Image 1 (tube, rainbow, N blue to C red):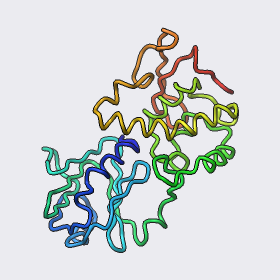
Image 2: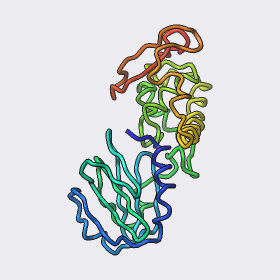
Image 3: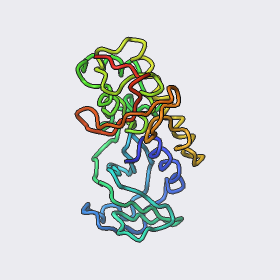
Length: 243
């Protein structure tokens, strides 16, 4: 599943189509594709893991789910979910969820919870954490209404950085650890963005998919944790469990 930084990269890559009218539409999506024909793209935006194509009066929302992908000025052999052709190129979307949002896009999204948005509000995130004290921090970090854009890779790397066990209860974490986690949610997301642009993201992973703790030289645990049952990679020795 693409995480927030990957969607920011897509948003940047398609800027050449901004201000361009759609001259052809195709694909196996069940949305009313004819509605897009001859419509001009006003802006491309991202919110967390959502890619947004804004037109006058409505927005196309794309979620890449687990296996979604895209191609710009290129095509895959698999069936395209949605093809948008412009006079200067084409955008092809695959294996994703697509739907319309009506009216002003700002009525649909709270930009203050997107960790990569200029309006990200860490103070608001801190207040929200007080309302879910019994939720495991591995689940809390994946809540998109608190940390939009944070996915499983970022979750694992943040918790390893701050020495916190993923099954720790949010309400039991020391204030210093809470502040570190909130801060790292933004810091690591932008580092992720930079590394991915340089095609060296995996080189910087310390915990995600790894087998050995670089700090303790001990095997990392691998386990599906929390209510969400997402994979966690962590060190039982140096990542403290707060319960």
